[in-house]
Length: 342
Ligand code: SF4
Image (cartoon, rainbow, N blue to C red; front, top):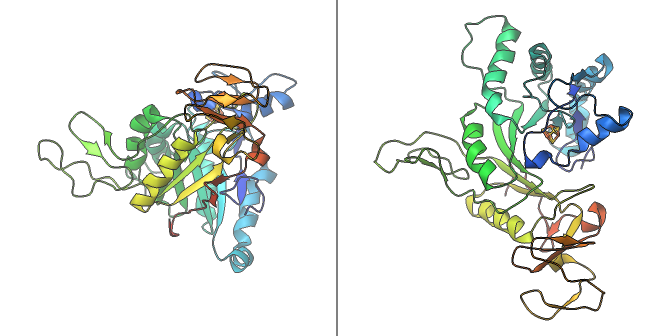
């Protein structure tokens, strides 16, 4: 699927700079921080408050121009535009980044109209202001108040649990954007995308939009669009936490009912019990098992060795590694994309 990236939903990965700071539970096992430390002699020199961010080389910044120029050949082979995931080793809307770098990035995005830029952030609350600032800087005029929507930007928010969904989805939907998407990876709990109460009076419906809706007092609700795409994935790497198949199934079904494209990126390190090629022999629906594999007893919500139980003590998943765990859900590979049938 990918030209220059191992990530399932993109063709290229471009990092305009490197470095960041952890902002939530989805950052607990940040791959990029570990990588930064590996190249920094054991210290993540570009991570945390006060740490300098490192701008990548001019040669790296020229790559998107080459991808853009290759549009006809790519389109001829794949029948679609190229996707660029921007900032796998950073966050585009990080407060600690020099605003001039971000202005340069948006200039590059405008110079590459044949590419769809996927800007995925854990700081969606900064996005509207920083996009305006970058584009104001670009045109050199403070009179530009409302940013023109860039047709080749897909704006995404990382959501790992219900609290983040309630807090950040209204912010995502309020930013002018051509495509808005959720990356729910690592998914750490069940998430209901059906309705979000934003102020005790008004509700929004992330998968349906709110055009024409009323609040509890009969007043017009905020007019917000719907989410265009949902990506779900489990965690990989050291310290990975298992993703319950129930959480993934629920999101698949919510998206299907709403007609929103759904993509299951990966299970991560753990394969769900139901998909395990070598499951232990369960003797009851509550997870009591015949100890034919020498499994020790352990508590609900805990891991033991390669095994993990969910909160109801049901045997949930086994650590087999990302590649072996794969990306099938109930035997189906879900590869929905915006503009395609869900
Ligand atoms: S926002 Fe992304 S890059 Fe930054 S610390 Fe969190 S996971 Fe790592």
